[in-house]
Structures are given as structure tokens and as C-alpha cells.
Image (tube, rainbow, N blue to C red; front, side):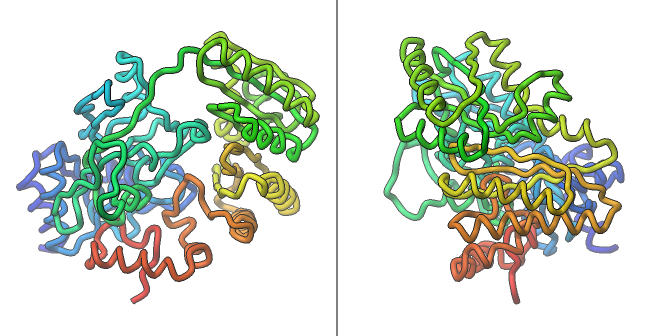
Length: 460
């Protein structure tokens, strides 16, 4: 009997029959994420229901030296969950319980398979919401693993800022907690920050304690168009410097506005456009809106409109939230490649212009959008996976975007994570600090069974 069948039989001994499978269809479903990277099937997929079951699964994998890949809903964008070394994919779908809501402490305790929308539906009963919005209805375990962020990070912070404690099953099956429920601590190394963003390479997250917020009393959304990207970014910098508490501020370039007009049947000016949102009380927001109007006018704003009605706000944000689908719909037969970098805000306008020029020079179809309040922007490129030249051009664009960001004190990924797609830039970005990461990986996972060959490439 080979190793895979031995492992399969041992897993059947600790799980119910329906929790462990080698069904080819299910293996295929776990062979890919939302990225353009080549799919690859695992040997086995398991569906644990508890931390104790995850521990037993990991012990079996450790015993046989079999790779483990944690899996949420597969919405990652850099190949994080593709099991190139085969082995066991741990699907956390069944670990989807909201364990505790401590509304007076503004905390919630959840299992890793709980999705963002599922959590917010439950929190609404308490007048609370979870702030991190990466766009996809991702699992909270996956969001922690990649340190996800999104449109609201300019005010509320990224995933790392919301994590108070994680329960983690280490590669040897040991279960630890990385924090506590206190608002702050000066005790020991910050293990929360070590495991958030570790992309499943150090252990399996089996429980999360997260910070939540009160639902704002009043929300106002706006749209402002500008002659150039420089004007739009300068307007945001001035608004932030003035202390206006923007909850969201997104920049969408003119190509993307054209695409969303076609898809959503809107008639927005095809110019660099800011989508803004303010949270607070009604009198305060009236002042913020008027102040913002003055600021953007000083930076050449051509058109500005604000919406307070919920339906109108949703319609306005639809242009931003459906942009990926707008490009897919407009380019049938092509696959979407989405990449991101993050730079100091003062470098953002130059970075976006550089990306647009490079995209045009290479003859690639796509758009640019960004969380302009924190210097993070994305390139959406529609490519033909069967065209080798086009694949080369997409890779060249990605490299140029990253090199530009790194040369200006930025990072190769602001929120998508490294996976396999951005691994080659790690040494360039981190220098000797990468060796520290490698030592941590080997100390915790000496057999390299936890999501091997992702995030960092160990040299032996």
C-alpha cells in the first residue's frame, strides 16, 4: 500500500466517511484559486469540524511527512491554495460557527470557515460590523492568513489590526493561542502578527478573536472626477492632511470607468474618479462633505456628487465593486490577472501612471484602481492563457509594477499576499530579513509540510 492510501485509511479512522475524500471532482475543485496560476490537484481533501480533528489530521501528515494546504473558499489571487506538492487539502467549510459575540467588548470569536458576509449578518443584530472588506465573500481564516484588507482600511485598518487572538495548530499538532482579549499587551513576541499573513506556512488557524465596530449612525458616499490621476491623488492627500475622517476612498482610472459604464449602463465622466464614503453622525458629516467639496475643487475636480440614500449609495459603489466582472464580461474567453502593490501615498500617482504607460506599451487590455488612502493599487489585466506572448507580457507588466514600487520604498503586495506569484520578489524586498523568515519557518515546520513552497522558497 502506498503512502497516500496509508494516509487515507488513517484519516478515515479519525474522521467520518463524508469528511475525507479522494473523489476526483472534489480534488479538481481544490486544485485552484481565483488566480491565473496553473491548477494542481491534492491527493486527499478533508473537512474537519473542530480544532481537535485538525490536530489529528496534522499529526497524521507529520507522521508521514505529507504536505498540508489549508483552504477557505479559494478566493485568493496568487496561487496560495494550489497544492503543487499534492498531499492533504484541509477545507474549513464545516468549521463555520460564530462561537461568541462580546458586544460590550467589541469582540467576536469565530471558527476559520465563517465568511465575512455571514459574520456581518449576525453582528447586525448587535449594531456592530466587521470592517475588513476585500471584495470577495472570503473566509475569515483565509483573510487572516493573507492579511487581507480592502476599501475600508484607510479608516479601520487591515486584517492584522483586527486580530486579538488566534488558535493555531502547529505542524507537529500542538495547539497554541497567539494573543488574548485585551486591547493591548507588552508581553512577549507579537505572535498575532507572525501568523497573520503567514499564508498557511506556519500552521492552521482554527479559531479567531476579532475586533468589531459599531455601525455608523450616518453614511454619505460620493463620486468625484478629475482631469488627471495626479489631481485625484493630491486631493486625497490634502483631505487626509485636513483630518477629514474618510472611511473609504477609491481611485478608478478612466479606462476602468469606461468599462463600468458599459457593464452597469452608467454615464459617468470617463476621467480618473474617486469614490468616497464618510461614516459618522449627520451634523458632523455635513461639515465633512462641505469641507471635502472645497478641497477637491482646489485640485481641479470637474464633477462631484454625494448620496445619502442607501439604494443610491449602493448604486454608486456598484461601479467599484463590479469592476472585475465588468472587465470579464467585456473580454469573453480571457482570464483575469489581478496584481497589486503598495507605495507611499506621495508615490501613488507616479506609480499608476507608470503602470498605465507600461500596459499601453505592451498592448495589454486592463484597468487600474486603488485604495488611494493607503497607497495600494491594483492592475486588472485580461489575458489569453493560450497565448505565450501575452502571458510573457503580463509577467513583464507585473515585474515592472513591482520593481517600480520597491524602488520607491513600497512592497510587492499590499493585500493579495505572496503565494507563488510574488515569491521571486521576496529577497529583493526583504534582504537579509528574509533569512530570519526562513529560520522561523524551519524552526516551526522542519519537515516543510505546511503549504510548502509558498511565501518563501527555502534554500537547502
